[in-house]
Structure formats: structure tokens, C-alpha cells
Length: 326
Image (cartoon, rainbow, N blue to C red; front, top):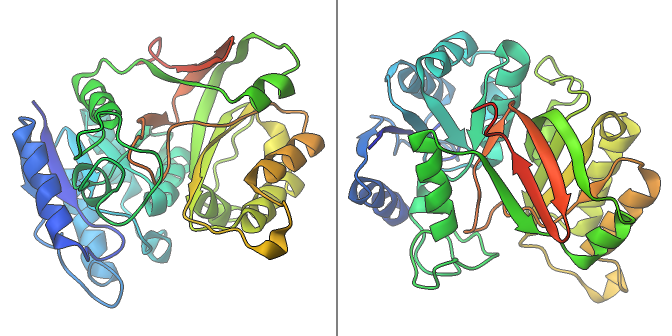
């Protein structure tokens, strides 16, 4: 199978049992797993100080692994954006290493797009994905969609997508659209985006790069977004900042994934995430699709950040296809 290099570029691993489960499951799947020497380091809230985490990224890039997989997200990469070895990572990608991660890792993925035009994969982490404890619960407490297998452990869809990426047979993904999406499309069917660069990730992390040297000026793209622990009003505020900055109007399509772990209150008086989506659609001519199985949830597809994709809508089904480029 694959040589998987596990490293910690962001937050400290707090759930070591989940880490051990994740590594063991990767090995059980037949992968050769190499764990970075500082993978379990801890300094303040981080997986080691800034220099420690930078060195870990450098070792991941030099490892020659098929997959460089983060242990978890959290926070920490924004602190070291100036020093990340983008050229070394881009060379590793050219040699065949696939960098996989999400959440805090979003900033590195978009910076690599900007600095090197490199493709990375939005996907699981060791603790959150492979270390999951049961059908509806990821090991670090990220709730949401249940496991597709209903039997516990890592989600079967996530595992299948990971295997496809490892084998080089990953060609696309699809999901069933909510009825509100179909109504918003006003009967539009077929190809809604063609050869459009796929980009995005965690909404807060995407927004954190706006106006910085690491912001990828993507026009005519497919922007996918997700987040965790953000109330709908905060999600709306972030989306509106991207709207007011002209980012959303320059895209071919906006795709919203899973937004989880927030609580509405009586003060919201009917205000909800659905109202946020409706408000966004009222201000934007670009189509907005929802329900993408990606985010801080067990059922997570893998997405090639920086790769051109076609997006089709066929009835209630949305398809994101990149096999022609893979």
C-alpha cells in the first residue's frame, strides 16, 4: 500500500488514544506508517514551538512518503506562514507526495496554491478521521454526520475516498442536493462549472488569508467551505466579508459543506443556517450548493485543492469530477 508520514504542524495531540488508534488503523489497512519524532510534542496549545513544527513540516516534505498526513488541526500554522518551506513541499508534491489535511491546514493548502500552484488534498487527519471511536463520533469530539457503515470506527466513505487517492484512482465525488438547492437553481441542470480550480476549506482559515501575501487570487473557481463551532451569524458575517471583498462574485460556484457544533438560542427567533444560505443567495448571482460531505464530520470525502474540476447537477445529484486531470 502506501508509505504514510504522520506529523503535527498545528495543535498538540490531546487525545493520545485517538492518535494510537489512528496509526494502528492505518497499519491495519496495509500502510507503512512513519511517525514524526515530534508528532506528540506539546508546547502551550501547540504541537511544539514554532521551530519544532516547522522542522516537522520539513521532515514530512523530505520523507519521500506517498502521503503526508497531519495528526490533527487546531491552530498554529498562521503563526509560521512566512517560514513554511513551500518550495520543498512543492518539490515533494512533484515527486508524488500527497499532503492531506483540513481545518487549520487550509492556510498551507491555499498558500501552496498561491506560491507554487501545487495540488494538495483536503481530507481527514489521523486523530479526527482514522482515530474515530464509534459510528457517530470522531475521536476529538467533532460530531455531525454518522458513519456510513453504522458499525463504528472510521467512516467507510472516508476510507474509500482515502484508498482511491492513495491508489491514484480518485476521479470525483457526489452527493444528493437538498430540495432548497434545486429550487434555487431554477431548473438549471447539467454542467454548472467547467475546468474550474477547486479551492477553499475551513471558512475562518480561508478568510484569515484575505489581504495577505498567501491569498490565492482565484477567478472562475469552485470555492468549497466548512466550519465548526461557529454560530450562523458568525458564518454569515464571514461569508459577507468574502462577498464584500468581491471574492464570491468572481467564482463559478460556491459549495457549502458541513457546519457543525453550534447552538441556536431563543434570541435567534428563527434565524438559522438555512436563513444564512438564503441571504447569501439573495445577494449573489453565483450558484450556491449545499450539503457537501466535508467538514468536521466523520463522513468526509477527499478533495484535490488546486485541481481543475467539472461540476454537474443531474436531478438531485451534484457531481464534482476531476478524473480527466488525475
